[in-house]
Amino acid sequence: MPSFTHLPDLALRGHGGAVVAASDEAFAEKEALIRPGRPEFRPATFGGKGQVYDGWETRRRREPGHDWALVRLGLPGVIRGVVVDTAWFTGNHPSSASVEAAEVAGHPTPAELAGAAWTEIVPRSPLSGDAAHPFEVTGERRWTHVRLNIFPDGGVARLRVHGEPRADLSVYEGLGLDLAAMANGGLVTACSDAFYSEPHHVIAPGLPRHQAEGWETARRRDGGNDWLVIRLAGRGLIRVAEIDTTHLLHNAPAAVTLTGLDGDREVELLPTTPLLPDTPHRFRLSHTEPVERVRVDIHPDGGLARVRLLGTLA
Image 1 (cartoon, rainbow, N blue to C red):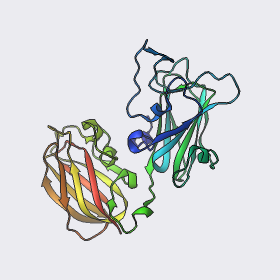
Image 2: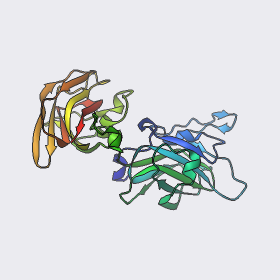
Image 3: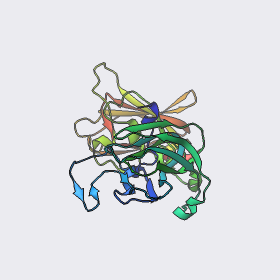
Image 4: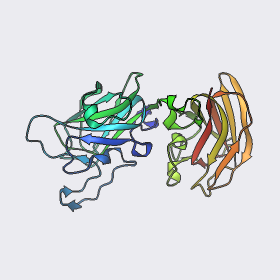
């Protein structure tokens, strides 16, 4: 898969995404489009509407037109790529699909979104059955919603919308916030290792349900240590660091170090500090200099469930 798939999925249900409307969902519900994880399939599992699918499936159209699903991004932002996955749909997948995007402020209803200014970000492209179709997206515009169009009908298992979050931080003016949070525009820009799970999980919304929803590295054999770099939502002063090892029982790091980066300048935020397994740790920081990025070093390896960096924008 292309490199953009390592970026956060802006539409994921766990990131606050929602399928707010669809033209039809006669065979399988629209909400499945943004579920986490790979689609599942159990053959010969029939319900009142036919074979049960882990995806969105519309009826066979007998009139002109095409089907569509409207998705609110849980993380508004710049879209770098889209994956339309027809996993397990073979004789009932669409022949082609396109994707449009829009930026609409506030909390618009489906009726209001229907009249929005939509821009095509993925032109109509052919689809095959039981396959993931990646489409790179160019441009630097911020989007809040996407619309998947399928031609003429059929089933799609998952829609992944990968990109960089761009939050509206005006609501936090004069207030504190989590400067690292993906929901606020934070992004993991580099890491030493992502063997077991993606590093951007550590700044995802909510709490992990199990260790795979955090970041975990392979076992190091070279005497070094693992690390990641978080680009903050904005240049800011960090007051509290939360380092959470929940669900990491025998693979938590022995210690953590936090270093602030501001241009070419480095600022010690937290010296090397021991960590416990399966524990949320909170550290009050005493530095007085704002930073743009934070390097999180874990010693020597292991995993983190979440990293929260609470402070104020500079």
